[in-house]
Length: 185
View 1 (cartoon, rainbow, N blue to C red):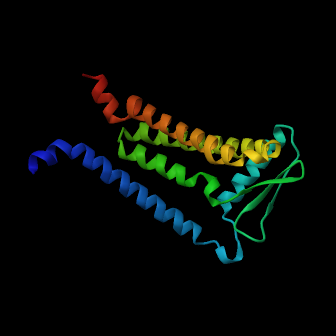
View 2 (view 1 turned 90 degrees about the vertical axis):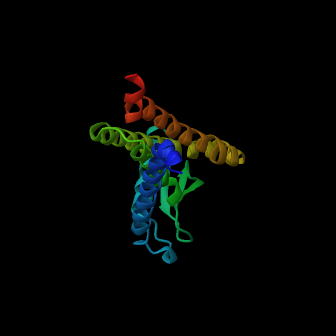
View 3 (view 1 turned 120 degrees about the vertical axis):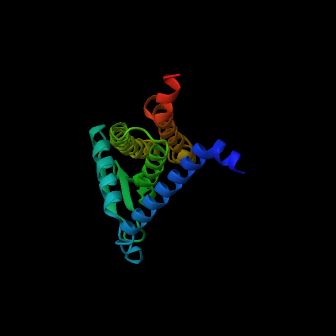
């Protein structure tokens, strides 16, 4: 048994750090969300900011765009050229994706400096891509509402999770302690 423990120790520590980081961040995020009254259809502040920034980006692209809090559910209504095209809900703010990203980077340790800088870069990059994602989804749904499943359910999740996966690969191969061990051999 001890032989297997030593053989799989790095993997077990990776899993332990990943799950502890993920659980801690998820608990903190849910504590944040609990401050908002779901029964009164109150939308959390991060989701409101994300919707506003996406709306501003749609306007930057040359389309008239507006947002309005939904009085019937916890969401922000998104309009393009006066047409209601989407609703921005808590799941659209990318916080759960960011938690997953952070937990992985923390679990695949690197130097403190590299870890903090990569986390900062990754969080800003993923957050910005998410704003772009919501803006592009809204514009696409304005023109192709019948393609909602393909646009929202397939293409854009594939895009955002693909980027996160790519950032993980870069982290492991370029900046983590694992990368420095394999390049020094």
